[in-house]
Image (cartoon, rainbow, N blue to C red; front, side):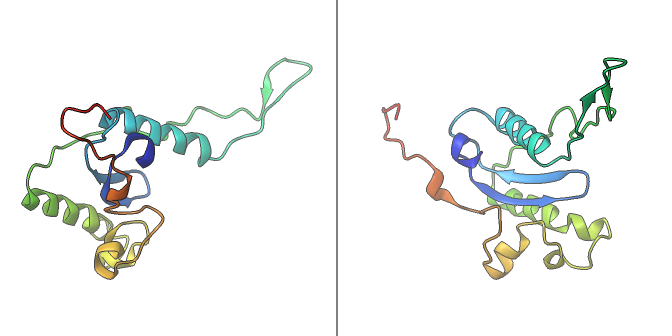
Length: 142
């Protein structure tokens, strides 16, 4: 999605029931659309599926489960305009697992960008990868 919408991930944390993402404004589309697609792809590819077979007798699907909402109906965004606010939000994101009592220190939580900043370790989600941005010449629509 970073390539499709051309945005930079500045920081993230994946929690048991939600995630926080600090990102640049997408060059294509808008943050709402980018988040919608990220959430859809996760729900389609990561969530377990139940194999369902239609019963010959009843015509109903056997093994059908209740619909499970994976995500909240919308996301909550916050515009960051200064370096001070970006650092504040990044600290909040990285401290979230500690605050929730899941780990004793941010570097112990494997599903965040904290180690990228502390140790320079590149994780599954690349942080501060500006190579995906498209250079624009003033007055050009390219």
